[in-house]
Image (cartoon, rainbow, N blue to C red):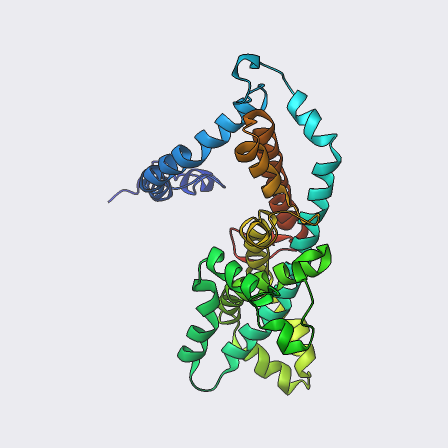
Length: 313
């Protein structure tokens, strides 16, 4: 019996090229694209088309009160918006509302998430009870807080002994009620997302830290917060984008009076109130750009590897 004289394949021929996907990986990737294609097409239809149409309107002079004056105006609508003091006042109002409400919601939401995670009994009842405010429609919640603080029909003034206090007659007191309503309604949402991050942390890390003599604060600061970075990012990202587009609460409580107008109300007033589709679309596109910028800053600022779901280096 003779030994085969054929040359043995070299190591480079036997091993797949480094970085090249295998046939199975390519097949799974192709299947993934096919499965997600209907959802991607639906998203393009309901989001990409309105965004594209708003961009088209924003470079035209489209005022339904004066239809004969229409035409292409380039970036004139953007220049008009960005050189208006009203835009920057509303921008400051929106940013202030967003920062204050999201910061309060993150602190309270973390406390609620830790309480729900550590609850020894009745976890289901506690979690259900905490989520009740988030299940209420925003408009209904805004009306409830408005009537509670309204001097004519509310009970808050009598409760705290200020029967003549007009909460919605001043910018900052009106914002206080708006932020209170936002925090009450959406803190459960943040708490739920943070709780999802808490349950992924291995309890063995806490046991090892206790053995090493770490205090409760050290365990929270050195273990809980770093490992919850992706969950915190998701909670802050979703909530910040939502808060930046705030409309319902402010519109119902003040309708933008007392200098409480936000960017969304500014766009509404241009589009619906003044029927100026060109300027209103320019405002909407600028809000969209701000939202994209917020998302970019959060992802880059936190340094989280979203695809791997863990903190980055």
